[in-house]
Amino acid sequence: MKCMKSGLSITIVLTFLAPFTASPQSLFDNFNGTSVNSSLWNVALPFSQSQVIESGGYLTTTGRGTLETVQGFNSPYTISGSVTLNNADEHFSTVLRTDLSVWPPDAQYHELNGINVVFSADGDQISIQQFTPGQQNPIFLALTSYSFVVGQPYDFTITDDETDITLSIDGTELLSGTSTYAAGDQIAFESREFSTTSSRLDFVQISPVPEPSSVVLTGVGFGLILIFRKWKQIVT
Image 1 (cartoon, one colour):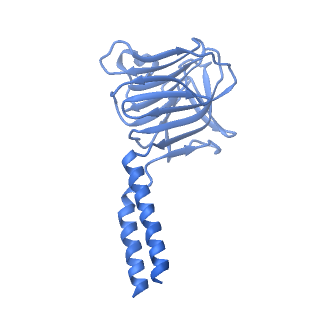
Image 2: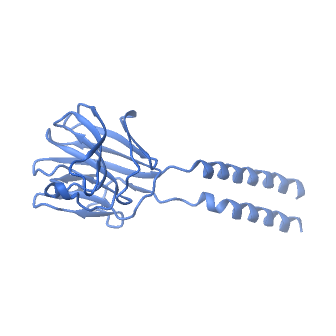
């Protein structure tokens, strides 16, 4: 009878805890394959010069070749990765909150609607821009100077909490912008539209940020498990 009570108690705790310990959607790819993982990514090649190639532990996007997530991601989340800009004219873009539709005023360049975090090698700038249907020009949410060295890898982290978007490079937070606009829930990575411009990704990771309430409740749940384990030792 004592064992039955203990098992029932643990079952109750696990039932309580289950909704708060389920793994949210996440993504990791180190590009160690010989082709793009179609379960994680779609590829868009809008121009004749566009390429997305996975080889040798890297993924290279050229001429606006676009790597698009298959699944959607709801904020809050972080996007982490390591990127190398291969050309002095390169603009590497991470587009979040996108539905992958093309921004109408700039369709010739295949800009995507959403929030665009841009690394500009030729302008020595980093920026957070908003591309919205009906807007004649992108809205700059944040902009600052940053000197990129061609051929050097940069670790980056982008955090989106539904309102604020922040960018860190090599562990230092450098930029923050505010917007509640979202065209969709997908994420894309792309190079500039020229045939000579490209970027190389070493890895990409998209991770959910736990809601504070979930963290607290998960802690309570584990606390209850420890209590019941102690109680089980006493009664048995």
